[in-house]
Image (cartoon, rainbow, N blue to C red; front, side, top):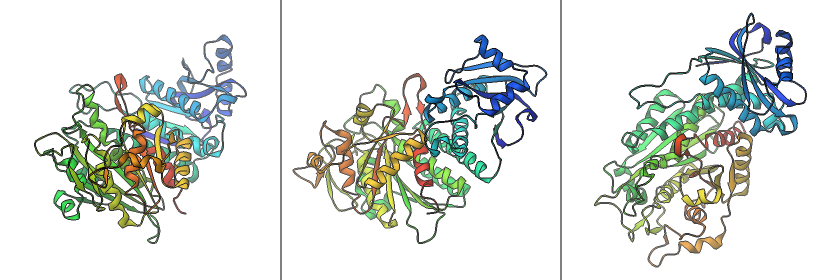
Length: 497
């Protein structure tokens, strides 16, 4: 797909399709007024007749003749007072849906001058161009790699987005959006790949491929022998029941000054989770290929960083394993010694994500991080608490938590903070080890984070539980690409500082 910005006059830009926004009430944006004048008042006439609507995200297609455009797509943008970033995003998604399924090979999108309420992070032209770029990539996504007969591809192959200028600021904003969308799509590709192909060694190969593709990425992979020598016994304990060996994957991007502390991302990479000896129910178990959603989002974020080259240092660490129940698998009741030296009594082998993460959180201390953010499809309890809309956030540092929450609000990739109070820690008490790996049914998301917090005391740390946001179930089943937008926005807010 060819995406570009243009600051040329709307009427001098030819395309198969022109996309304009129509408010439900309020003043028209300049681009809509110009299009109407060029079309001899057609838009005003169609609105008056009720053939097109300004209702938010309502799209209408109007055939044209003897114009620079063969057809017009009108998208309703709602009332001025209701045009939040979220509603603007819905309108953009509707536009991409209409273009994706339509006959146009090229499109000119004139929606950057539509007013959006809120602060500059949502209302500025740069913010809107970033969002347009992301939505274009995100919603033109398809995944048909394993179908013998490929669905008919969209005819659309060129999109020009109208802007007040095609200068560096506008291009950088638009390209950041496109890169974020591509990062999300990479995350989705990894998540949607079947588990007979996507296993820990395969994930490590993807990291090595990234290092070859991007000069700024350096990759190191630790195998099971190296991890055993270091004492990463909890990662090894999770992988013991599988023929696929675990891997610790490290990717480094050094775009900042040598003295700058890196921001560290840690991803849970359980490429398939049967629950181990504590076997899960069979229904819906196929979706446990998405249990590597945390690692996939780390990959996607690193791809955005490698493409946009911000002045920041970022380290990504992925703890990858497959949780299977063969004769060598860990048992409930086993006690293992973590890399930190603390011992864990494994009471439930299906609480394996925290086991791979705890060794990774200990390992990252070597980088002297500015902050560490881990992400994991960790607890079903998070879905019960927050549904599928918000990511659960827990942290040992208020400043870091607030920065992540703000990044989620700016991007629409929202999170909600849960408490990490000491009162919950006692639920992890064990009679035989320093701790047990489950805290019972009450506050399951919180006690999982309490477990992780014991290994993250030496730096600012936040945990993102993406169990409810990393993938869709049902007919729309598939990885979402979250929380890549949140992570990218958070990292970019620190770039160059």
